[in-house]
Length: 98
Image (cartoon, rainbow, N blue to C red; front, top):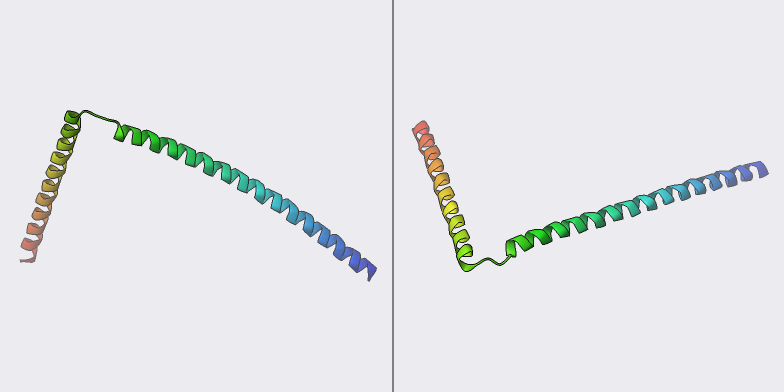
């Protein structure tokens, strides 16, 4: 009976050591992930700051109006092209069905 109790104590001791080692490993992994997360957030914030600075940098009224006009023209041209292609597709589909 004493031998069995001793064996159980030894087994419990080994299990406790294994759990302690695993807990230490998990804590170290968590610290590494935390550092990676902080680094990723810092880099993302830096990139977003640069992008915001570029987009929000003051430009003269003429430059801003010119840029808006160009983008609006490009959007209209693109929309017309998509509408033309879609009309052709629908015409072809209608001819195929008829």
